[in-house]
Image 1 (cartoon, rainbow, N blue to C red):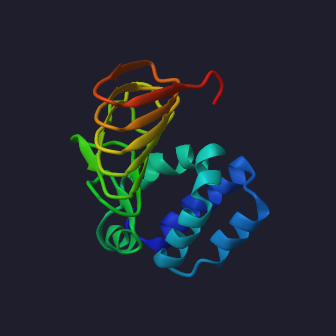
Image 2: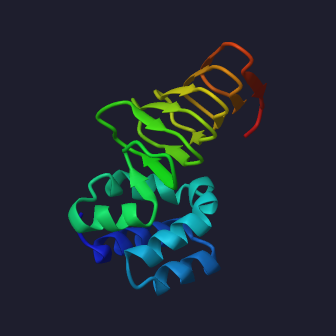
Length: 175
């Protein structure tokens, strides 16, 4: 996928299939370029994630290349790459991904490995994922294997967990 038009069509189809909220859908349709669309993603991302539109989109956005990928980076939206800012979407990484600073990371790809440091946030509901938290990183995890260190904080119901140092884990029965 190389063009804004292709990306917008993927988003439109995903929103249509999942019956997106009217405000978010309208904002997405009004986007004239990649920067506008990435602004909509950041504004509505939690709704996109919870409603599982992202499951549909991420299968295809991992193929973003060229100018589209550059424009997404300029808008602080990253795919399968290390970052310390913005929104990171982990779909099908070929190597472990490191997220730091105050970035927010959403993990969709089974087999992914994510290491979060500083004050980064990780969100995951995918089995077969390995997440490591260090520093003051936080995570909300519904599936996956986790290892937490330092003063990091994990909330959720991971498949397995190893707690080290002064890290904190809060189990939640229903997510």
